[in-house]
Image (cartoon, rainbow, N blue to C red; front, side, top):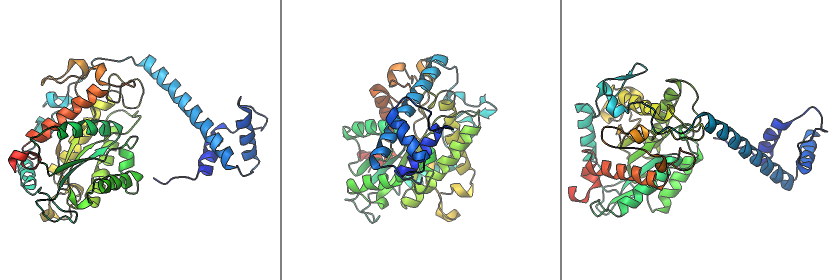
Length: 373
């Protein structure tokens, strides 16, 4: 995303407060003088720009707080929505769309897709910084996503560091970043990718060592009814995967997750049913790869490789405190103050789900566990 100069940002922002006459008052004399100076076409000093930006940021924050307060009054926290988790829905339907994590209402990949994943898993070996096999090299597992993802990634990294059963050649790098939603990572020139590269370099790693990714993304403030927001998220996820493949040429496999429960949300950032519906974006994306769509190709024998082999990582959504068949629940205590970002207990819960997944999935055991090498 292209950035504007401070002067242009202020100019654009001040236009929101333009009035027919410079005599109109905002209640802040200094701010009014700055606005009047701008209306006369005069250049603003750095101090004036800085002050104006602070005032506008404060007003923006106050406006957001008021909107969130109104939202919270109209949408009190719910311990359950009555929606059925995709993993429990099976052949049942939601708005005419079948459940299950994979096509046909099942929760495991079709045999041919699973077989391809197992074959790729055997190719995940330690690499040096140039991408050459090296028993002293590293296997980089990169996480990708927004604020929730980085919080959960950090919990996962801490748990993994304390587990003696893991392959010491595996390095987990948290590439996720706050406020970097799917619409951002879908952009090839987003600053997000620069930060990911910096984090790899800081860890003494190269792009050629990244072989596996965990991706969890969302877009903020969804408003449109199903399936419009889901289709947009699906498109942004596809673009994100294209960029991952282009930047990390040895990326072989990516595991995707959708959002946790959003029924406690105290703002319209990502409430229900949108948090639940985000699971369909992942489901449809993987289904497109299984169906053989060219933009989803992962096999060199079938043409240009556009994305890694895809599968579900841990499915994180559950119907709040009501839970799902496997016993997973999401309580109010698992959320932070805004009801959308996880608390320490919520982060630890997702971290444990991630660790258990990578330790037990047939396509990850071969390289993730020390005893499997």
